[in-house]
Length: 483
Image (cartoon, rainbow, N blue to C red; front, side):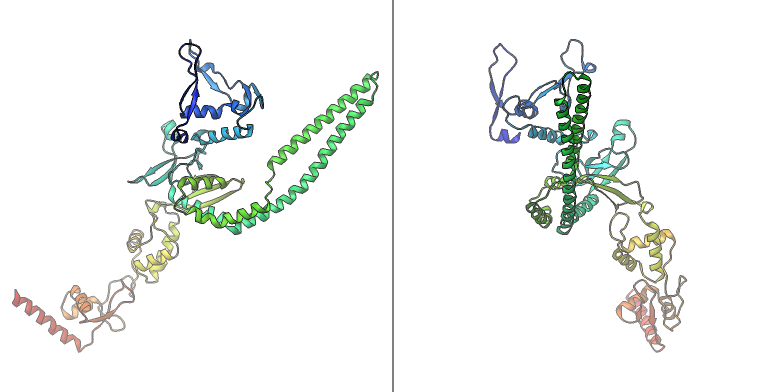
């Protein structure tokens, strides 16, 4: 449509208003006229009747309205190749299917044309709870966070929202699965499997050929028997005619079964197609991630491989369950850990609690525990990495005290190895614990920790105590004189 307008093309129109005869005029192309051309079977060389019919429920007294479109299969008359055509009938039917799919009518199962939004499953996401097609909305301050929504219950029945699923993690998983499925080694395995199916198909083709030949032979034999009977033998002729008709019906049944079998058989892939598929597997990641590839292009690529994706975030706590229906008819189920607002909905809260308890008993501090959890694949509630604050919050909520070198009790004045604690040094020198930390930072005292967060073990020899006490008195005297 935009191409026609951009190139200044016009279409002929015969106005129905005004005096007769109506002259043909040329007007700029518009979407209604272009769609009418694409939907008109006359351009495919067909004569049809019954494209529309009256719907009495829509008619108003004295009005000509109330007509509805009829499906192509229900047209009263459809004579193909009735006159010269611009396009073939197969191309006409393909155009009708494409226009029907381009319409975003989720209720009737039409996904709509791929758009420029970033959501990868636009139009092919199915709600795993009610089976309806999910719509799409964009959240965030810049509308750059897509969300798959199932809101049919809310829109039609004023009920609660069925479910909403954040699109970014789901799209990342679908993208990874798609690229893995189209990797060169996977394509090679698929081509090998198709080769086996082709061999089986050739064997079945030979069997069907023999069966069809046998049915046609039986029908031809019945015809010859009917042709050789004398007309005076009416009873015999009637019996042979009935047998001939049965054989003809048997031929028709076999041909119909053969046609159905052929429609379900895999396509034959030649050597050139095999090489092209392997090359595509090598180039697809580069094409997929290229800056020139738009979101709509990625969706088109995806729809060639994936028919639909079923989503359900309420089936398992803390997880998004998804089922991929591939274009081949095969299905695969996957799980994705989702972001939750509180740890009550966390996917594996008991295993997380057990692991934190184990690391805490191993005398690990909160930051160390957070680092280990991140290395082991744990993710915090909101989808981010664990930090020391997260671990402290969980320990406090679960009542897990920090395990120190002396258990969970208060620090003694001196440790069993003879070293002093912070409280012991403060009592020995007559200073505050904060001053002890200051002396450690300035190097007046030496000490050690098993790890950061564990109690200090300070070395305080007997000969150093008088020196530090004298230092304390001088400091206090100088502060008093200064005041």
